[in-house]
Image (cartoon, rainbow, N blue to C red; front, top):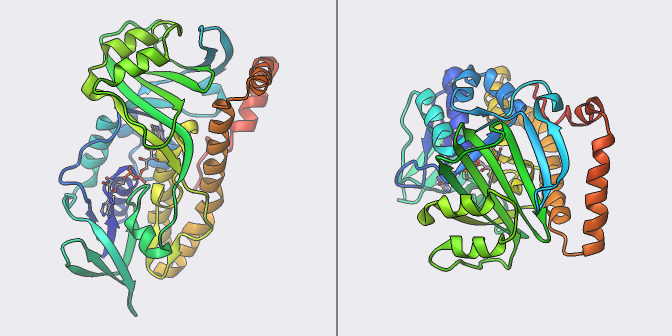
Length: 376
Ligand SMILES: Cc1cc2nc3c(=O)[nH]c(=O)nc-3n(C[C@H](O)[C@H](O)[C@H](O)COP(=O)(O)OP(=O)(O)OC[C@H]3O[C@@H](n4cnc5c(N)ncnc54)[C@H](O)[C@@H]3O)c2cc1C
């Protein structure tokens, strides 16, 4: 029996993959019910390629909306750069609500997640692992997978207390329905001093927006976060103010952005980390969930292919660590450059981005191909 701690995107995808591989497993989720955390999400071609290995690409694709163009603008809406998303790599990039993605994964799982059950600790045994639950129960298993997110308990049991790395940035997210969208397949990100605003269409008149700004850790909004956001983004181009005004205040989600510096070992005996528990990254490259999906598919494949669990864990780590860690570092650096408070540096940055418009699509495409390509 394989125990999966965490019923988030990584844990659910792993459950689907183990199900297809006919490996017995149980997912334990700390939350009392499975609720999607967050508003929208974008999945890149590599995530769909990974999902294709477990026959789930069509199901997840069907709940998404095609993104074909990516615009980078300044705060007045002047274009710095436009990229054609499909030309960046073979395959699709799709945006969707987290709720729809979660629903698709749960439907494919074919079993129930045990909610209200937190994993707190584990101990290696001669035949596997003994998993300790918050209610005191101890469960013997062949393998424990810590898919329990940024503040993973399995990781704490494995590595002790490690500090999170605060990026210096906080984020807000929201969903708006019933808005007219000029270019319904174009994702737009606009950059101003120390803050940026993104708009991602997830339907013909449905938008997922996000705002990111430099802020001290732990800062909180007044009761209605839209006041703070409309003040911060006053004078920015349309339809930013309208999107903020149309979002119900109780549906604006604020999250400080943390990651952890990369580590080079995700395995301890018969416990292994996956997704944000292994490689939490800032959301700047939109790759956290995509990497959790890749992890899940590679781990399930390794468990089916290798003669022993130990060999499977070795294969999993060697296939995954350098790729996932590279996104962690690049995503963190991206945030530092996007949010620099140094005005001359900002000027050079924007000139460099404008200059990228002169680079032919196929060159950019080649440079990014590895990121958007997944192979088992
Ligand atoms: C603002 C923002 C925007 C993002 N946008 C994108 C995007 O567009 N594209 C993309 O690819 N990624 C994006 N990400 C990243 C993505 O959300 C994460 O990388 C992804 O959710 C990680 O999945 P996970 O399953 O590893 O962890 P999680 O989704 O965090 O799931 C962990 C689960 O474990 C449960 N849990 C915690 N502790 C325990 C325990 N002790 N026992 C049992 N269960 C436990 C939690 O309740 C949770 O359900 C974004 C992140 C943020 C913050």
